[in-house]
Length: 220
Image: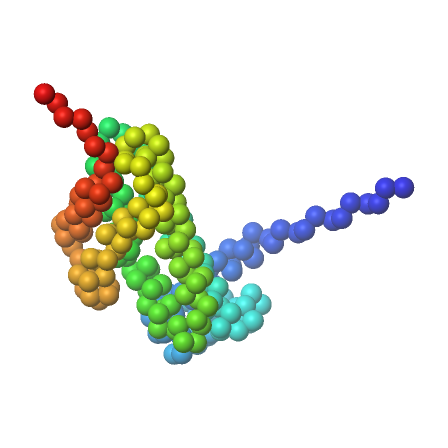
């Protein structure tokens, strides 16, 4: 006689998921404002619009909540930037323009408040939570670089870029975008205006294409 199939895992109720997400979003905002040590779980509960025991129903303690909130934010940053890279799936006839658009949108994302807060919180608590560096970088820098390498590989196969190591090319393009941003923004403490962001993005693409752009035949 055949054994009965194992019962399917229950999906958490939608309301519980929404409440958890609200707590995570509120926690990130409060941690970003006050820092880890100065933040109280009561403050997070008030910001999320829930009772303090509700927070503990979802997360065992402040440390678990901090880890979960930074991980959730890192995943959100990853999704946002990978969506930006989809522009390179169909770059059109003007590859330079498509790359410049992508570089500008990546630069804007790097400069936005939540991305800055994510970096600051991660670096500020590296001694207490050293493993979070790997979690945050794994979700952001590494995954974004992998996605960009995939897009550049496709452009190489189609002859739009010179034959290259796409992973190295992706790493270098991201460095051309983010490196000057960190310097000019003074590690995120100075706002960079739209014109300056555009200038930085265009310069990054010009340098990248000088190294990796496909050679065009001379026209007599």
